[in-house]
Every structure is written in structure tokens, then in C-alpha cells.
Image (cartoon, rainbow over all chains, first blue to last red; front, side, top):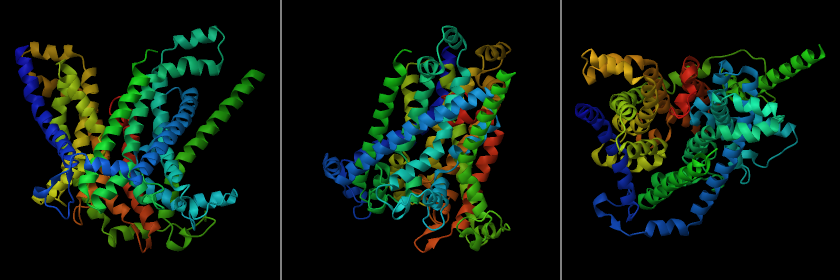
Length: 291
Length: 277
């Protein structure tokens, strides 16, 4: 046994050390920077000045931050809810038809496997006012959006969320499907004998049983949405104005366009804190509760 | 008879709904492909032209004029580098998680999960500052290091599940026959886990292949990866939609091929092993 311990310590130590040095120490450095006044272009690293919570105060006083937080919140709620509802529908449909995964499931997953940057460009192209196919369809339906969907303050974020829903709904659907496939048969048979209808079975048996799988799906989507950057970068660049700017995008702008890395680091720390807090909250509400 | 008829109609309806759903989700990709093989005149006609003679001019241009093969080469180098590091360092770690119950395992595992969901921007700042200081910006190394952070976390998560499925008894048999721990790992466990290893490698490569943010911040002219190059089809002087669509298809093609081949592991890979598909 002792020899085993030594063996496992020896083989896993390099990996642990590597991961700590490439993830943990850099995070500590970012937190350290967030307490300093530091502009990457103007100040050499040796001359940074400690300003305590100064950067955080700057952020919380800035209306840009609250605008981006609101947009991130809208993105999270609309994105996750719509993807879950449509995804559940698709999953139930596929499950009824095939009972298993097949070529349909891997084809439908393709959007979720693609590079988000490519999806952003494709949707920007399809939303193009002159030759985009979406704007063509919208105008045929009698819906005219001034300046096109992505150029309009009130619809730009929705356009991006639309692309997100398109990309990730299949993913949610297939996760739910794999959950459905793994479910036991007995509760369903019992319910049918007791005369429960389809909706009752869905809300009282299927959904509660799917809880662990749904939790994983929601967790992954939250982590992904909070770090969403690629699609926004190519679809609107946060515009028009800051109408579609989310926290992650604002952080990018401050760090790499303004090079104000003190404030930027504080932004990043806030974003990471949000990811962790949301993950823990989702986990606690959905997973730990008994079924 | 009537009952069977109704069943058949219902089935028909369900199949057509699935077909429509599938079409809706594939439409943007199909549309991109169609646009990529249109020449510049037919691409802009509205309403869209259904019938046209396909042209490969966009594909020729993205390689000849824009040198996209350099970006593809860069993407491959970065993806292979990051995957190699992740596999060499991550596999033993995953094995340790699967076979031991140390007290710090839980804590360490949460840390690995945190590295996986870590927003790239968090890590990009210290990497950028450090790389600029030692002159490593615009090198392959710094992007490889960045990508290895999430690839390695992914590897550990994914492989732990595969290792846990291998019964300990098999390993114990090997040890009774005189294999050392290390020999058991290499001669018994790893060969059995080979499908898992292959799936892990493929997904690591795709993760790295699709990354935009690290690459945008950390690469320069010579080391620009494919997603960054694709993003640059967007210029203030206008869009090169046809070329952009062609580049998008080039970036998507390998992912499409792999996802068809690795159907069995898709869900597992996309959830880093959290859901067994």
C-alpha cells in the first residue's frame, strides 16, 4: 500500500505542479494586479502602485459595468431558458422516435461543435441588411427592423442570443436525450397503470429524474455564456454603442484596447467570481436536493 | 385497422417534425457552404438564387491570396502541442483520481473543474503580461501553454471516467503475475482505455482548434491560428463574404468529420465526461 502511495504521488505530481503553475499562480497574479494602478503601455510592471480596492470602486461606479452586467444577465436567462425548453422538446421527440442515439443526433450536434467565431460570422452574414437571408425572411414576414437586427440598439443582443440558441439548443437536447435513455422503466410503467397522462408523467417523473443531467447542462451553459466573446466580437463588437456588450467583452476592451490592466484585472476577478457563485448556486438548488 | 392507421400518421408526423428541426439547425451551415461556392455576382442576388454554376474561386483565393494554409499549419501546431502536454501530464493525474481516495482528491478535483470553466480572459492577462516581459508574445509556446490549461483539465475529467470503468481486478491480476505499477499502467490499463484516449485527443484538438480569444490576444502575424484569420475577413473596407464562408467551411470540415467518426463519444466529450452518452 505504501508503495502504491509513492507510485501515485510520483506519477501525478508533474501534472499537479504544471496545472498549479499555469492556472493557480496566474490567477493569484491577476488578483494581485487588480489591487494596483497599472496600465500595460504606460507603467512598467516594477512601478505599479497599490490602490487597495480602488479599481473595484471604479468599476462599481461605472455605468458601463452595470450595463454589461444587465446584458450578461439577459443573455444568461433568455439563453438558458429557451435552450432548455426547446432542447427538452427535441429530446423527447427524438427519444419517442428512435429510443437511441443515431446519425440524426450527431448531425444535429454539429452547430455545437463548430468554432463560435465561424458561427458569429455566418450569423452576421445572414443578418446582413442587403443580402442576408434572415433579413430577407423577416421583411417577407412584414417585420422591418430599422438598421437591421444587429445594427439596432434594442435587437442587437437578441440577434446574438439567437445565434447562441441556434448553436447550443442541440447540445442541450442531446444531453437530455442521453439522460432519457439512461432512465429506469419502472416508474413510467407504474404511472401509466395508475392512469397518469403524458404531461403528469413529464412533470412528476421525467423532469425530476433528469435533474442531475439538467444540472450539468445548465452548469456548462452558464460557464460558456459568461465567457462568451467570439460571437459578439464578430457580430456587433459590443455595439451599437454598448447595446450588446457583456461583461467579458467589456473586460477585453479595457484590458487589450485601453490596456488599463489594473481595472481590467478587477473586471476579470469579478467575472470569475460570478462564474463560481452561479455554478455553486445552480449546483446547490438543483443537485443537492433529494428527488 | 383504424388504430394502426392513426399510429402510422403519427409516426409520419413525428419524422417530418424531426426532419424540419434537423434542417433548421443545419441550414446556416448549408447556407454557408452554398455561398462559399457561389461567385461574387450570384452571391449577392436577392431573393437568393437556387440554381447557379458552382465555382471554387473563393477556395482558391483564401489559399492563394490570403495564405490560409499558414494559419491552418499554425492551428495544427498549437493544437498538437497543447494536446501532447495535456495527455502526458493529464493521463497520470486522471489515473490517480480514478484509483485513489486521498483526502485532497476532492479539493484538487474542484480545482481541475475550475480550470476547465475558467473564462479565457482571466488567464490571458497574466500570460500576456508575462509573455511580453520575456519576449514570448507571438510565439507558439505561449498559445500552447494557454490552450494546455483547458485541454489538460478536460483530459483529466474525461479520462478519469474511462479509467474508472476498467475493473481494478484486471490490474490486480497483472500485479499478481509480477507486473510493477508502472508496467500495469502501460501494458494493461492504457491499452484497455485506448478508445477513451483517442476520444480525449480528438476533443482536445477540437477545443484548441476552435479557441479564438487566447489566440487573438497572444498570437501575431506569423503565429495567427485559423479562427483569428477567419475573424479578419471582417475589415473596415468591407466584407469578403464569399471568402469568409469558404474559410468557415475549411475550419468546420475537420470538426464535422471527427464528430461523425466519434459519434459514440460526442456527449461524453462535450460534457468532459460528466454525462455518459
